Length: 462
Image (tube, rainbow, N blue to C red; front, side, top):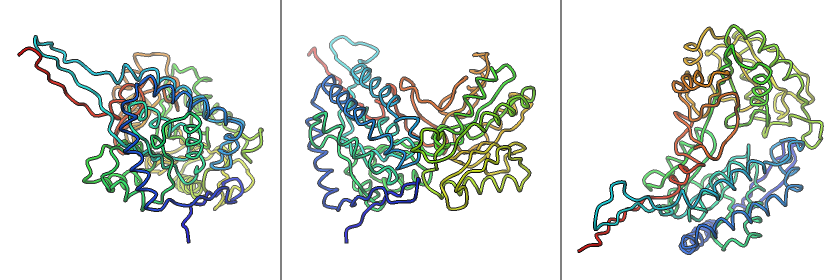
């Protein structure tokens, strides 16, 4: 009997899609096609590669009307927010735009008479992208486009929860006329993925997911000497200073905490507020949060859909219950249909009287719950922001740019924001520290992680 992957929709628990898992023979054939296609693709001028990427983007955007409800059925994001194509466009266009400059050879900084010396940036070969379900197009495009622009072939394995996204990418690349084998979407189980990573046939893997998943990737790849890009867990903090523009901070931090049902890699999971503005901030944050409408994501009035899976919602329920047992105070307590154990439907929650003995302030939530703590000064805020196993982003809310920079220099994180949060700028490198992983994506630095340096030391005068 053929093994399949079943996509269970969080909307009603139905099986929305089911696909057969590739046979081992099919996986091997895909890798061989990728290797063969990559050699010719690497010889394709960068400008031509860019034309394929932009044609793919056009084909993908043309599917918007089909894709938006498809995302809702797959992982629960409300249709009112449309697709992810604003970010997909921005990142694709930027990475195509900078490719020639970012990938050009670098001459030696100290010229020598009679010698030509430079470092060329060669593609790695076959890049495997293991993409997550929370932002299924954005997270995939972060690596897929620059990997292809750099001359690599790409094999995409998308999350089972967003199974159809890989197919949409394949359709878009096929419509763009990309040479066969340069990009391939595959459906694999965990054992096949581990086997493929350990085979030595993959040159680089980019994985976005859990810390446990990242450790499994590293273990599977051990001894192959392949390069790794791992974006793992997060527990992103915000610090609100007395001079913050309060209405702006409240509106943006509520959105940063609860957009996409809190299922954002760089979503706000804990907020530290200076004691001088604590009461004002908490009052505004609670009032803004109460505006959410939780329900069926296919309805335009819904602003928060179900979480992607019931077990994710149950984790949030457990974190809230533990925090309340330890003295936290819940402020929303919104009544939502089907909000019960074993259901993916969950109301947003704001907790105060929290501390770092509670899992909601230390362990990744990845859902619609946030704890707010009062702090006396910068020193206390910085110590608390750094009291975490993770480090993806941190946001600082103040009108004093130099003050924000001084604080940001001391925070253990991959990105420092001021007066904004939960955003990727493709011109800036996307990276993390500690258990958030390693590697880097986007920007010119992202291209360095998808190529290998090759030195040329040529004596021309003999």
